[in-house]
Image (tube, rainbow, N blue to C red; front, side, top):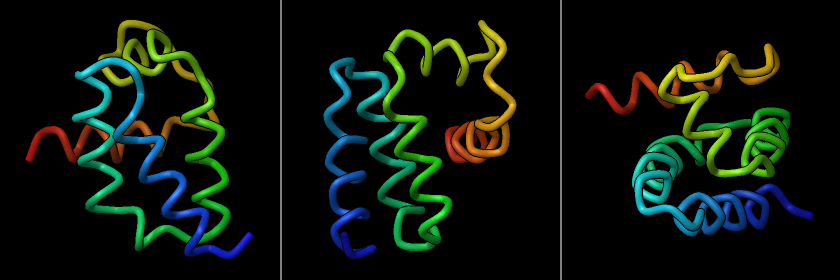
Amino acid sequence: MSIKVVRKKLLIRSWRRGTKELDLILGQFSDKNIKKLKMSELNLYEKFLSNDDHLIYNWIFSKEESPIIFKSLIKQIQEGMNR
């Protein structure tokens, strides 16, 4: 699959999470950052998105400890929320 197709797929998945809060948070993050991410980062983001919404929400809002592999990604998302 080409990087362009992967980016488009992840952009759509970011905007259609199932909860309005995550749609807005991840959709806006994706709009701003998806074109900058390398394939390895896109693969990590895809793994991140494969988690349940309640887990992602709790990780982003520091209600639960996230897996170490997602720490830097979550930090990027949080920083984007504060702008």
